[in-house]
Image 1 (cartoon, one colour):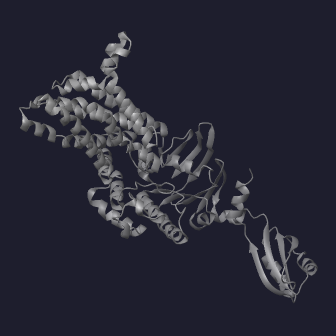
Image 2 (cartoon, one colour; image 1 turned 135 degrees about the horizontal axis):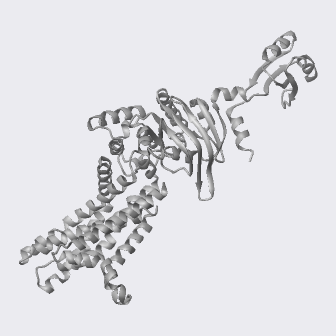
Image 3 (cartoon, chains in turn blue, cyan; image 1 turned 45 degrees about the vertical axis):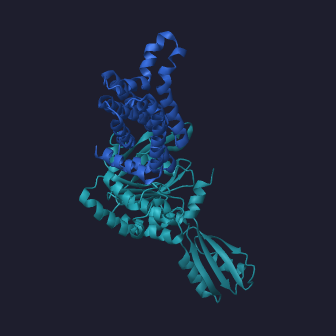
Length: 234
Length: 311
């Protein structure tokens, strides 16, 4: 447990040493801010539904950029050898890095709290869906983060890690919008696989155990995949 | 201290390490020699628990790598080849991180980091990012990393590669200093380094051990043949052969062509045992002027070449 905390702290600090963290945060805020407020006044409703509606898409390319370096960079530089020959287990390394990614995404989400505050001044904002949305966003972010971590554990090339993670995240986001192309008898299963579908449920303010379990399973599968990939290198 | 039994490592079909056995005793400095690509790094990576052996066992004290990998890692300090550190961190932060992972207590950390900074000469770079530092400094940070928890065993993979002669001397001094109390394994392909620092050497070639012995006995035992170089003024080869050839143990006397100076006769006596005393007695009786007289011992370099160039 101590090792997890140590690795978490180190990884989290490393995000803020390089300018990448600040670039990712500002880019995210610019993109979401533009898409949210450009249509906000047309609807004339004090709601964040539009913001949360776009979040899975924006997360699909922001989070892979956050997680791509977690393992790939270490493989490439060789520092992985230093890390793994110290008394740590694979599990501790993976969990530490995963939580560092999740913490960074939480920081990004905290900076968007300015939107609901601004909206609450403009109209009568219902905070229930907002909190639901944020809880869902953290679950969604953590799921994508574990997918990104898995992609990063496969390769020493950060670009490949980024593209692999992005492809998986996009597929999970878009799968329930592509259902009419797919065989009819598999619809039930496939729609359950869609991350967007589960996220929209939570962001309405209804926290259903099915949706929570979905996200927790994605997190578990991603981390387990990363564990297998890392063990393969041993 | 460390026992290695029938250790093998295959990368797919390629055999990097083939059935090697050796032991390292407590307090010994062992040099792992071999040409590039002989499997030295692979052996070290298996000992440090970074790679899984394909077959065979490694045991440290009474722990084996299959069952107690974490415990073994705690006993070992490892400096990988060319010290691949986290290059965007500051030296102090890095050492602090290592101290935490190594399980040092909060109070012990700063004194230990200061102590290591003194030993490894890191004081003036403590607050600089690692990627701005020279190779010599990185190597020293790597050493500090390996020694952080004061481990009983140090494993150093080519600790002096890529350094300038001054830095090499510094690193060797540090190694010799800590070698008084610790068990150390050093891999290298620089032979003078092994001769200077190691008690024992193991030479690996193409994944197999071709020689295992202490550095001293190596030099003496392999000389089935000694070469004594003699340079004389005022003698010709025929006379020298007549005079010295009768000594027991002298097998042959050959002249060495001397381009410039015709006055001198240079010759090499091949002897089966150490006959320097008798040779000198005989030479004393003549009126030749002796200008050079020495015995060539077989150096580690010769042994190394002979053993590793056959294939």
